[in-house]
Length: 218
Image 1 (cartoon, rainbow, N blue to C red):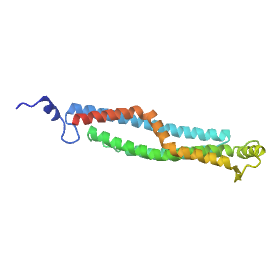
Image 2: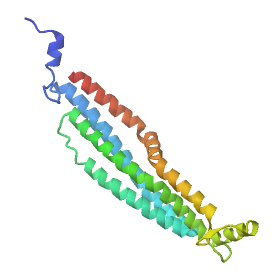
Image 3: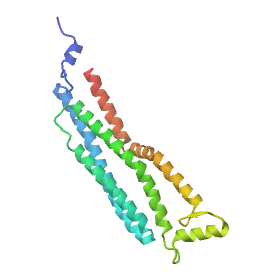
Image 4: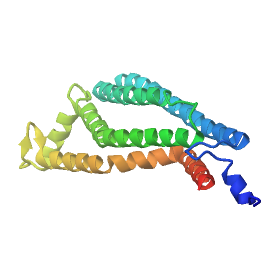
C-alpha cells in the first residue's frame, strides 16, 4: 500500500524529540541559536549598562553631597550584576549539539529560573534604593547641619507636640515604612514589567518557535 504524504512527512522526524529532516532541523536550529544569541547580547549589554550607571551615580552622589545613597546604590547594583553574571555563565553551558526542541526547552528553563531569582531580588532592591535615597538626603549637609535635622526642626516649629523616635517624627517613620512595604509587595511586578519592555519581543519569538516545533512533532 502506498504511503500517504502525511505519513511520509511524519517519518521525516525522529520518534524522540529531535527532527531528522536535515534541512528542517537545520532551519530550526539556526532560528533557536539566533534567538538565544540575541538574548545573550542584550543581557550582556544590560549588565554593562548597570555597571556603568552605578559607577556614574556613585561619582555624582559625592558631587551633590549624598555619598551614602551612591555607596548603597553601587553595592546593591554590584551584587545584582554578580548574580546575573553567574546566571549568564550557566546559560553559556547549554549544549548546542542537542535538538532544537531540547535546546529551546533548556533555554526556557533557564529563563524561568532567572526570572524567579530576579523577582525575589527586586522585592528587596526597590526598598533598598528608597532607603538609600532617604538616608542620603537625611545626612546631606545643609549649611553646617544635616538636612534631616533641619527638616525636623522646621516641623517642630509648626507642630511642637510631634512625637519623635530617635529624633524622627513618628508620622515620617510610618510613611517611610508604608512605602517600603508597598515597594516590597510590588517589586516583583515592577521587575516583570521592566522585563517585558526589554525582552518582550524575544520571549514572543521564543514562544512562537517552540509552538511551531511542537506542532511539527505532533
